[in-house]
Length: 302
Ligand code: NAD
Image (cartoon, rainbow, N blue to C red; front, side):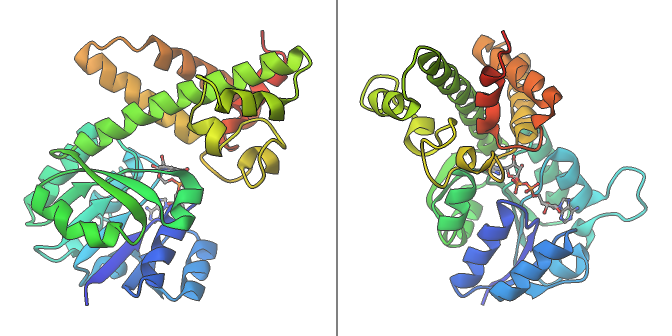
């Protein structure tokens, strides 16, 4: 049986690792949070005392961490730290699959450094949110060698419904940040439209229904309405708790705009969304779900 190590059991990694266990895989997990570890232990995973212990002997190592510095820190050691990172403990020939959203440059750098140790790498960021992670319906957007992606596929299919190959190392990350830049624009635009309608006496439930059946239809209206009490079970109806944090969306917008700068691509909509999310974060919403951008409009920021 394939031995799997899974590092990073947060909002996304927790349910993803749980789905691997549910599918009957032997999964050894590690996170800095004792609470996250306890939940996975209850779900049936083996808990390791350190990240190095978790990866030792694993055939496939998966990671789901916040940003570039955490992923680089995990594999090669944090800056100023004497610990060299877990890459030194991964067996030769093993496959590392990182699902964190990080820069394409960092993904390519990791692939190259691991290759020097005969370790294979696939960048496999995901789309689908916390609900998709829990339901096992994520979309994996992969970059790397086709054979490595095929090897990871059965595992990814325990956590998701679609596995795409975007291209070589880093291509998964480019596709992912294109998607998230568009998502930020759609979420901000949907919140703006709903608030405008509300200011003119419309019921946001009725307006949402109208736009869903009209040309403004989009994913946020379908499954992630930003206006409180329009849709049950979404962060907007739970004081914007859980979900995908404003500061993580800001990170992704930063990655998108830096990528656009490299290619000289025009991204005025992405820049507008970044400015909006930056202002929203500075107003204390950094740790709320990204649909809370609706509050920015509600608070009369004009
Ligand atoms: P999160 O902050 O909820 O979880 C991150 C986890 O990593 C935490 O449990 C933290 O303790 C752990 N961690 C950090 N450094 C570690 C280390 N060195 N060793 C072990 N554990 C460590 O974040 P999340 O929402 O799960 O997001 C993870 C990644 O997925 C991010 O890159 C994010 O952009 C991306 N993403 C998130 C969503 C979403 O809806 N939340 C959707 C798609 C993609």
